[in-house]
Image (cartoon, rainbow, N blue to C red; front, side, top):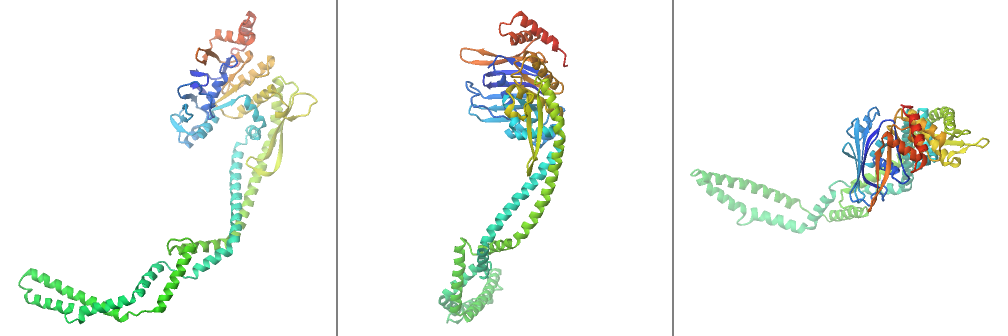
Length: 557
């Protein structure tokens, strides 16, 4: 239940606090006083969108805060699923700045509007005049049948299987589309792969070829360098070896005299050995080096071919040709394997279709079993609510195809008159009849659903007299197992409340504001008498108000 509601800077409300009771809470007030504004504010903390005009005339941000008693509602798992701190007394707050930026909190933890709405649906069920449009909504009608027939677990199983079936369907469609694309590109991919594969390109080859080409293109310079270097090292009249040998012999004669000379002599010995190795390698290069014009031409041709393929495929390095060849190879192999994949997926889809269809048939069977009983209950309730010749029937028809909700279409058929054929309720029922139908449906749902609170926003429009008492009795019955907040214009229903609130307009020089107050017993007599006889209520109206309050006081508690 909602135990408290705080509203600031919303529509005609500057600031007010309401403390609701268990059972039936009544809200009354003159037309336009702001009764429905309170319900609108409550809707905001349940995840509804804000009317852009609701902050007009206010200078501060809009704040709506509700305190909810959650014990017994089994909401712990829902809170855990969204990493929310659960408490038996939880606070939901919505803040909307003047610029329109919205923030929402559950127990001071920021949440998104979808999460707020998901939690809100478990806390409060608001029925207003526009809710009558639900009678045209196929999902609402089917949901009503499912709620009565107790198919919640089966619906969950079906939805899971259907989602899996739908996923397989999409995968198969994508695979077939890919098959079509691969088939049209098969020859192209195979040619591209063969062109790169026949090149027999290996990683690092392009750079190695460039180095070899550089040597071949500088063949004459290299030959001259080898020869001159060997000459200077070994063959010149004053060669590097002869000079270094003289230094070595000179130091050999004195190396024992001083430790420093010993070290220098050792380093010269090492230099002689190193220079000898250099000379040997230079001689080998000089003797082995030959210019190969055919090799030069071969490398030039190969590099040109490699570069051509790089440019063709938009590559920046030659080694990327290996990956590109692998891509074409995979495309070729995919084309060869995809038919087998399609066959396997088609088989899995057929198996899943049988599973989903079996669940759909089982679900349809349970729904069908509920049609006659719930139709009879609704018909009897409507007759009690002042439609003596009412006939109400739920109609179930099967589709040939699977959908997310099964294979059933649900119709609500109704007639209020003898001798008239039943037709879809949304087409033949008057506003007052629809209100009574919705109340009956809400009553039935409340017996099987666990909701924290029910809110009725003038559900009693278009009725009066004895029917109003019967409708009030249903509303009062609902309030025995859950909190009910009812905005009403009927004195009969107002007299049944455990708590009675009056909304009034305060007209100032600058602006008009709405306020709300809980009425005392004497104030309730005055309010109900005015609902009976107008602002200038007569003594008769006052006595009627007292009679109503005495009649219903404690009747339902």
